[in-house]
Amino acid sequence: MLTAPLAVAATVVGLLLTTAPGAYADSGGGGSVVCPPEKLDCRVTATGPGTSSSGSAGHSGSSSRGGSVPACKIEGAAVPCHRDDIGDFNPSDACYWAPLSPQPPAGDPLWRLATGLPADWKPGPNQGELYNVVCPGAGREVDGGTFWSARPPAQAGPDLAALARQAVSRMRLAPPAIGIDPQPSGMGLVGMPVWMWNKPGATTTGPASASASAGGVTVTATATVANVTWSMGDGKTVVCTSPGEPYQASYGKAMSPTCGYMYQQTSADQPGGKYHVTATTTWNVHWAGAGQEGDLTVTRGPAAVDIAIGEAQVLGS
Image (tube, rainbow, N blue to C red):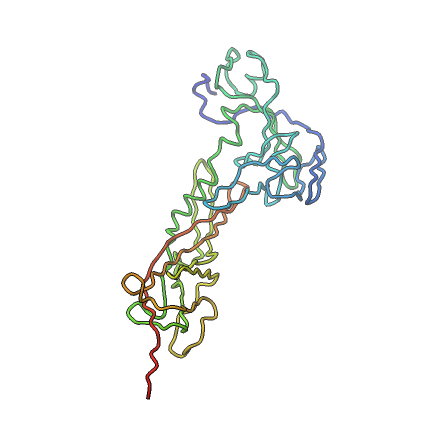
């Protein structure tokens, strides 16, 4: 047993005091669900993942560009990230935590029961709060009790989105490996097809997957290529949702069926007499861990290449 409040190493210790919260009804544009007080393993249909009927949301997703709110789950079943009657969902233990209001006064026996500390211990500033905890689970009765935590438990665990970003860094995602025809050493012609492709590889075309762990929680992220944006150097942009197909001589003057372009002017007035072509990959990353999941978007690039485009000369007889 711990003998001093400042020596508390565990984030949460306590005495189970089973609770029976009231029924909860979640209604929104997407549907509704009613959870009886004795069972909370209800599947939820709401207007968005991780959002309650009041619009409150739990942990928000992290994205370099337009991420999404992660879904809170218990044993694979979606649940609200916040419930007005039982508090915030904590992914570390799949329970809902709500601070007791008001908190018991200093010296109240509940402090000793919930912390396991000596009877004469009194809470001081910044020494945490007592929480009512409800732990629903698929196929089991409500479990929980009164617990002490040094900080809000929903914030006590590791930052899942940060772990997802760490997992992404371990993938070593790379800019596109540019393949292009006409080749940089040659010359293309105005009005003739240009073929572009991203050479296949785990770090260039994916999919790629990696995990990161902290505080006993593991987040696994999987990245897939959404598209490659090609800036053609003449002010035009081509977005290819396919890696593209390498050009072969047997294709002749055919346009690429997946990722191609056709210049309308020569590159004679460009620096070095060539168009500066760049390519940037947009990756969609889906992550999951500790009963939550979410999405973020990352980009890699640009990669660059210079190609010359000339004009066909018509010879007179």
